[in-house]
Image (cartoon, rainbow, N blue to C red; front, side):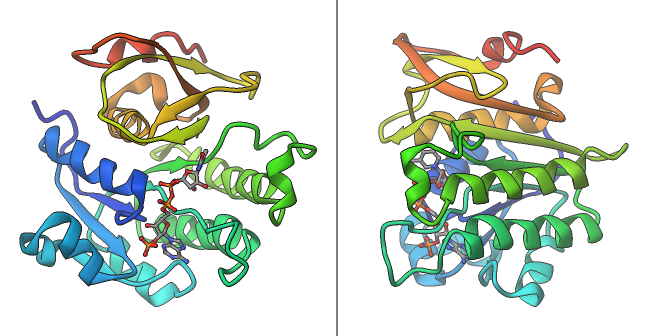
Length: 233
Ligand SMILES: NC(=O)c1ccc[n+]([C@@H]2O[C@H](COP(=O)([O-])OP(=O)(O)OC[C@H]3O[C@@H](n4cnc5c(N)ncnc54)[C@H](OP(=O)(O)O)[C@@H]3O)[C@@H](O)[C@H]2O)c1
């Protein structure tokens, strides 16, 4: 059943989480458009029929962002810089400035819902991951801007803070949701993060909320909607 009746722009659609966001949007019959750096990579992942749903570009380029957001009413952003590759731009350019640029242009162009994949522990400056260009702090600064822009009436944000990302099929585990960045450790499949992002488009519990997500015990799920009721505003 289709629970969300608007087109969703997936930023970072050719990434390992973005790929699953696209698959879960397809599973829920929700319309989408993809913002990707490589058309060839997108066609390899999604097939040639995807070509009409692509805008090529990067988060460094405002005109390319404008072109991409013009196709949609909501965004799921699963972009992340490659922190371990010294040849890649630093987290300050991608995970902070790039995401902030996307959020500002999206708001100006009338995007109503912004869903951001961030990370567990962004509020912990002493966390070891911060030795890579302060990546967690950069993500927190991007989160802050998304919260500021999309908490106005008529708009909404959802910020997902997953634990360590793993691969595998979705809906094979119970999920644990938390708020306040108090979950210190845990992991979650990218496919489950994608499912949480897609359900957050329509589930009112997720609107204007920042929450952490990790996997609990192995247990097949028909739906993950019930886990959203664990979060209280
Ligand atoms: N690894 C973990 O354990 C972990 C834990 C918590 C949170 N996270 C965060 O979760 C998110 C998703 O992680 P992932 O493992 O799915 O990442 P990933 O596979 O590395 O995908 C990152 C995506 O970002 C895109 N991208 C990078 N720089 C860009 C730019 N300047 N403009 C536009 N797109 C750009 C990449 O494009 P290409 O496809 O063209 O390369 C790719 O599609 C990231 O923000 C990551 O930091 C990761």
